Image (cartoon, rainbow, N blue to C red):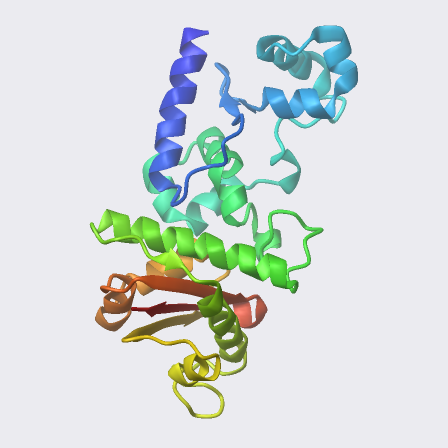
Length: 267
């Protein structure tokens, strides 16, 4: 058990190094001594017949999985059904492979703990079925889904600012309305200006939003919020907006055109 605990703790630390946002506060999958990624909580919740016979001890549940569950088609983690391809994942996300290595179990561990919730693709077929969504039943065109993706990007923005010793930006619902409109416009026309030829600031004026200074970052063709923020952290003009002395922000997201992202900041 000490070996398992050591492997899990070390792997979690490695995964955290390349997860740009903290994982949800819930039981995470573990790397068992034989290298298998197993989530005891998930296994128990989805196999009540096993719990009735074996209890909820992770070691007992894992023993059942190894002896019976695997051949019965039971899943070891919530990510098991996604058809994970380790070679694809390493090539697609070299920053992950640089930290986790190329061992298939370690890469799958990263995907199960971080990558799935970050919207990373588990295989080429999933990427070809863009836009990415961890749950295939999610309607990516709903406002709630777009807002959830936008707020993930906002978390990455503040994580990047913290890394650069910059102050946290406060989320603004009024700016979010503007950012969402701009994201939809950006999906139609990839330009710093709006389709009508006006500056993004015209939208701030239309919505009655007062400000001393305002900035905008845009990017088209990226599915994941972390990729959008990494793009904004490169290039002087974008970085000046991302890390500037602003007070409020919002992100807009639209799934069309491969993923359109807009960061609006004001002070």
